[in-house]
Length: 500
Image 1 (cartoon, rainbow, N blue to C red):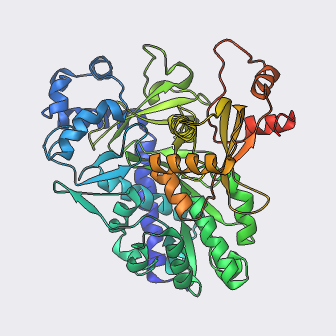
Image 2: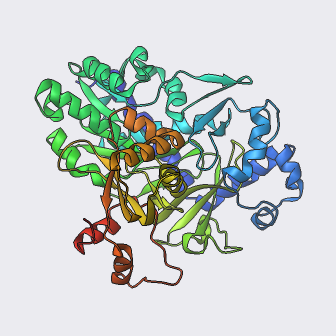
């Protein structure tokens, strides 16, 4: 017999599905209301006055007065909030800063306000409720659920709490889930990831786990520890485990590995959360893409990725997007982010309702494990590692090795040397030290034994030129990407026997 909680979840799920369908079936009107509300509430802020919000009556007015910005361009406003000033980007003060790894200069402080915080929590809840409404499966609410996340211990800066988003959200788990939720608060607060995973395994291995959630690379490590400890597949250890919730990275490279670790197929729900907002979640098991959250205090704009770096690329709203086009997603939010470029690119898989997939980043990057390593970081690492040496490099590119034949995954650096290193181990150590110092996510993955130290593969002299010629891109403005989130380039290098 289902519990009272499982029984009650079904009518609640039906109610939420109706509410979501109401705004999803009136997308343009929904976004217009969000837009008008944002402008109205921020017109007396410093940002609102600087950009004449009191005169904005249309989207065209907004485009003319508010340029697209990334974090670095918004930083002067954010720094005033960090110092304790009020009414800068949004009315009052934020209640949190989500602290993330900066892509150019130090940490980023992403504001979260009392208006924006509930949307993070509701979207995650609604993803589960729509799953219940679609499948009729609510039995899992009676079992134990684990959410692999950052430590909920928060710091404070001028009266505003700060931490990683997953740690902040941990404070908002609904009461009706708290008894089912694992791991314990004590375990969740462990900073060392390897120690934390071992503690989570000890706590959960004899429990009736029904829902497991987290970034795939971290969950994989948890699964492997479980199997190592118990000598059984995860699906045998947890006979009622039937729902995997994930976000943060593309799941597809992990899918086959996960099905092998679990020993059977399980349903999954994909989420698209970020410090800047909870943008989308999978609303249907058999539909490609995630439902864009149009009623969550976020106003969306889109710029075609191929035109993004032009002087005045066209900015459009959902009304004018097309299927299958790669767009840079621009957001304005109740957290006070205005025409803000989060760096992600998306493609629409459906326009009724509006569903997206995350297609990548507007700049080249590696985030196969959630590390968000960018071109600037690998270039800086190589510059620092070869400084004051005789090493010279003709060309290089970096790619993730997700499924090595043995050992942990790693970043593989394909380098064409002009003057080769006498001590390759020292070069690896110097590259590793610089990259870890620049990127806290990468440091955490190495420190947590999710990744092992990078590996250098030498490319033959002239190898990159031969590769570019083979794809018809030798010369002109064509460049080798400094890094890629897949192995398309490096597989071609190997195929052409251009590596040593």
